[in-house]
Image 1: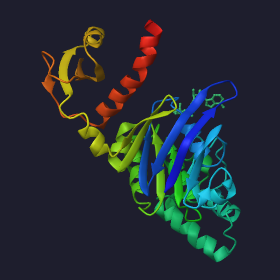
Image 2: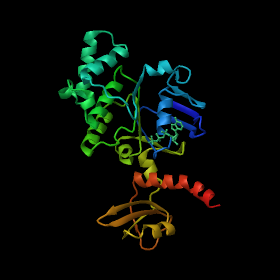
Image 3: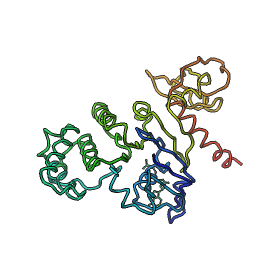
Image 4: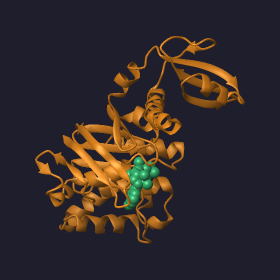
Length: 297
Ligand SMILES: Nc1ncnc2c1ncn2[C@@H]1O[C@H](COP(=O)(O)OP(=O)(O)OP(=O)(O)O)[C@@H](O)[C@H]1O
């Protein structure tokens, strides 16, 4: 279990990226969903012990993460949002090298581990190719392979599916799903479907704060009977937004399908079963409301 209590972070320029984040994250896949700038990467780096928060505490089992970041690192697998540099050496050699750095000293043991990881991440056939020449999906699978060295009990993946095509995304999510239920896996993403497809528990982070926490099923249940749908001409969105609380809209065949949140059926709308996307957008709309009201005042 990973426990965060009152974690806040203010960058030197005054940006409050995290504001009193308190979360209990059990074993299994946990989805951390939030828009760009919500504070997800700051939170992931903080949990990984790579940057100290301004205040708050983080515990992983018996480890006090802020006091003993090295202890955490021994049991951590981290796939950052951006690796930065992709080396010109082969996936096999790179994994072997990283296994040495993580303390797998025995050559035979290391060979077995590297071969296992390359097979697990479906990279065996390209093990001799330079990582610099990998596609985005292959890089992300390599990222998971390196994160799994040393049997981590806490795995953090930061926006792993951004930019992947649907086939690679599926392949990546299948890989994550197979990692196991006995470890804590935190999937940070702005893609609602990643969380809906994989995570039994989740939280929404926006403006540095936890806005919502629970199971996707519970959260979807919380808006049941309050989501309504209507198809409007593609020019009608602004008018619709002025009249109703539009939580989402999407284009379809040149028209727009809008979803609104309301306690009773608005005229011209039909009831629709809301999904996690509706929960997410309703939460973001709620988050923005005080700011909008303050701006108008
Ligand atoms: N080193 C930094 N110095 C100052 N402000 C920062 C720094 N890093 C991030 N921020 C700011 O903190 C806030 C949270 O950023 P963060 O990268 O954690 O969000 P995010 O949810 O991961 O967003 P994205 O998906 O765009 O990466 C943003 O307003 C960002 O501009």
